[in-house]
Length: 297
Image 1: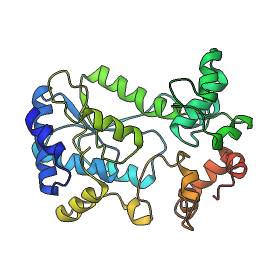
Image 2 (image 1 turned 90 degrees about the horizontal axis):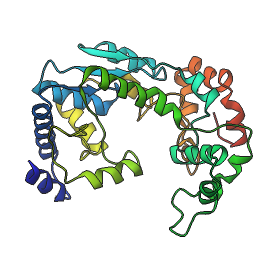
Image 3 (image 1 turned 60 degrees about the horizontal axis):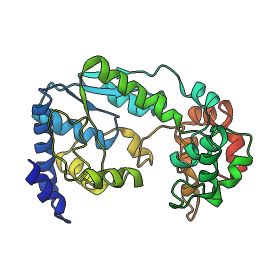
Image 4 (image 1 turned 120 degrees about the vertical axis):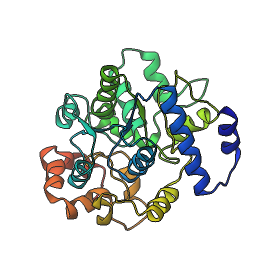
């Protein structure tokens, strides 16, 4: 197993059929190592739909688990409900409670976390490092283009991901003993790519915590596989959405507004889901931040 992983990760260009074979091998190894005690983390998006399809070709009765954060598109909820053998898990707290207590998810996870630390840490040394860097470099130093956010009377935080996704998944694993299989593909973020590169030569055994068997797939691979196998995906993709993450998340929206004339996700949401758009803009009062940042909505 270790040799096959090293071999395939050294190949820069491999065919989709090779990637499928490799994914199947990883799933079989993980299933065996865990004695069948695994679950498919199913978000209802196209990546996890492909993962569930492959997993159930091998193990028809493998359980899938949907962590309903309360921020999913109605089309995703409907699509998930059409699948069989799906456990649906709800978080303890809702999004409104989390952002009021901890802060809004903007502009990126790293920046939101850094601002939160600068404002709330009791360590002057850490605060100075986050503001000015240190002798070891400027990693995590707050960039100048985001310094103005410190002057806003608005809290920023990445804790919504922790409370709505990580905590429920951790609790679920503790209570069931099942290990997760995640539909993470390449290029989803700098941090994920960094993690994937570090882990590319690992091999699976009983101590493997989780499996990401699609991490060598690209989005082009996913779309081609869906087309070739004629796999049904959520109708949300027919409404102009390329990704189906949390409806109310503002991470990365500033970049969507710059350098093109295309609609950002909030402008699209206004057209496709006006009720949800009104909720985020007016009920959650994101309008205040968006106006300050000159982000169209």
